[in-house]
Image (cartoon, rainbow, N blue to C red; front, side, top):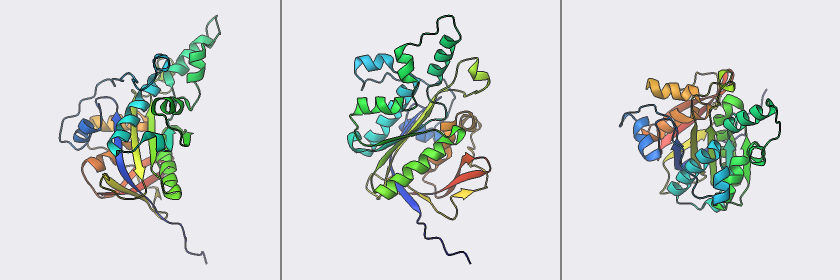
Length: 275
């Protein structure tokens, strides 16, 4: 006889959200678009300059740095917490796609010398490093990639850290699109990023409660889709945007289960409730 599982559910409270993507300029307006309180129109993602970086680093910052810093700062500001104290989890399916294109172009040319800026932006933890520089964060940072499952993998990692360490954690998930010819084999539609400050206890800042139950969090059920066809196109077109149904549940104050794309034939079911 199999003994009963002693695993405990992972429960966290959302205290801050950052959002930036095609037609989405931040959580304040984006939450209304996700909840159908305001119209959503697809438009090219506009990346702000990372003014929190020193001038030298700002000049070297690529799209992934700009999007991750923008959403990270928005989420931390909304949470009322100090960025310096927050452990972080960074998750991306492809890292800096434009930088990868430029390096491949250089290697395919007659002059195979790679610029130092291209080289140091090519490492998978580049965004994490720039975040530490811009925010002064000295807490631990985890950087992971799980291809199209990267958002769900990052969420699982962040929620685990919150519960095990009993500390708030910042999750930043982001993707950028490739130029041709890589775009034809990895057709991400645009740049997208989201950030979440997750805490172990409910507070006056809590927006929602999320739980991963050991017996039901891994499921064969289909992923939750967006009713709005343009938002559904965004969800399926960029791996980091797989978060949209989860963010919509916060915007609409819904309770229930949100199923996120994860591995082939195995999804991640999150129990959500408003605070």
